Amino acid sequence: MQDSNELMAIDLKTQEILWVVQTGKLPADLFLTPDNKKLLVALTGESGVQVFDVSGPKGVLVQRLTTGKGAHAFRAQGDGQHVFVSNRADNSISRIDLKTLAVVDQYPAPGGPDCMEMSADGKTLMVTSRWSGKLTFIDLSTRSVLRQIPVGKSPHGVWTLDHAARQ
Image (cartoon, rainbow, N blue to C red; front, top):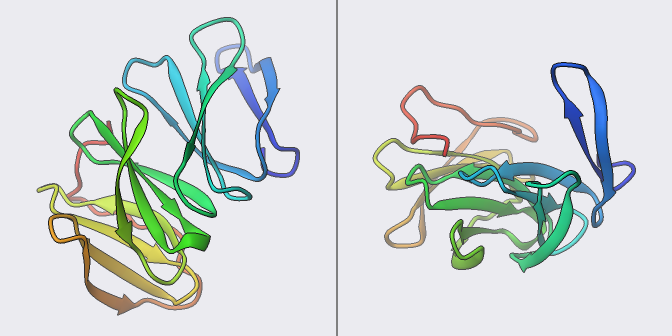
């Protein structure tokens, strides 16, 4: 919850609050690891991601990853082993290894990167460039911007039918 800097778990069946824990500044997106034991929280008001162990009765902060200023949104690479996080204020994308919970790559992403989509072939990451009003295509093999397409003011979200697996 961005306004209170908290993470809340809710039982979907009963709609009851299970627990609430404090996070860093301006938590944004969440990503659950494939084993359902760790939850990554992007901190838009800081320079990275918090990792919570959610396998017990309450979420417990176990690790912090430095990714870049304004960590904001996650997107799975589609290989079941990596996830990307956009670093809006740093104009970069970080790739996190889900087994080691370490940052293993950085990619340039101009214009305030926000939401992302991964191509089905795993070669191209599409990113909304929030501050420049563009959709940016990043070639992962060369770590370079392929092209940018103007899409209008403050784009937020990108989705295609032909995308990589979500985990």
